[in-house]
Image (cartoon, rainbow, N blue to C red; front, side, top):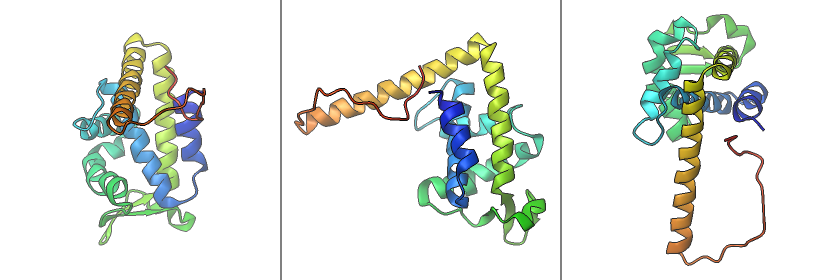
Length: 178
């Protein structure tokens, strides 16, 4: 299973709830930004988000609003499960032509168009990754670090709480492809 193709792109395409679609988009682009920077961890979330949104993988009209989207869309839905004031996310088709327009209440984000633009960027990234040892290395290093950090947290928790773990082999359906 390929993380970007099978999990991120498929999930962005299929999600129908506006808030969840936006949440998937902002966390997916933050992850993909880490593949560009080669960094991951709590101190790199902002720089990773901005790296992807300001990259060649996103249309230029997003570059000037990337910081705003980080502050009011990403931080709102990722931390509070609401879009902060100043952003109006919607999947209402009759308003799709208002995507990225500014209103008194905030910037209008047509979630389906945002998803299409992000998917197009992810597909461009995948094409570049096929021919770039540097992008491949950063991709593998980030996923390896995420796996190692998660395993270390889990082992520390099990040890601290004196938990007896099962030796039964088990597999989930979302696992990084490194």
